[in-house]
Amino acid sequence: MRRDQKMGEGNYPLAGHHLKQKNLLFGPLENIKTGAQIVITDFKKDYIYSVTSKDIISEMDADVVEETNKKEITLITCDKAVKTEGRLVVKGELVDSFGHTN
Image 1 (tube, rainbow, N blue to C red):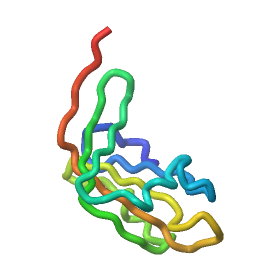
Image 2: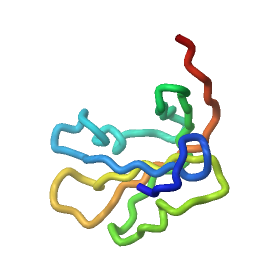
Image 3: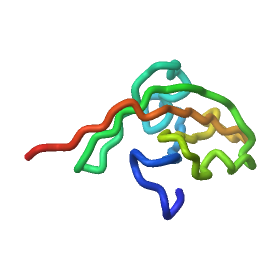
């Protein structure tokens, strides 16, 4: 979402679709709980984040993708699968990362 973003460094925002079939793409985020793990990979390292917050914001609140000094992830999707102006934002803090071995 930003050209300068890097996994495991600062704020790493990702946006995804929330469809009527709630088990696809970012649909499951509506049921995520604080403390749940989010794992992403760049195929060189895995990055493990712990969910710290879940909020509904306006579609106009673009500041959630801005860089921060925290090592965090920001997941963004529509707050429901039909026409909506709200966005579900899930934030997590980096708790671990580890490299892949072949």
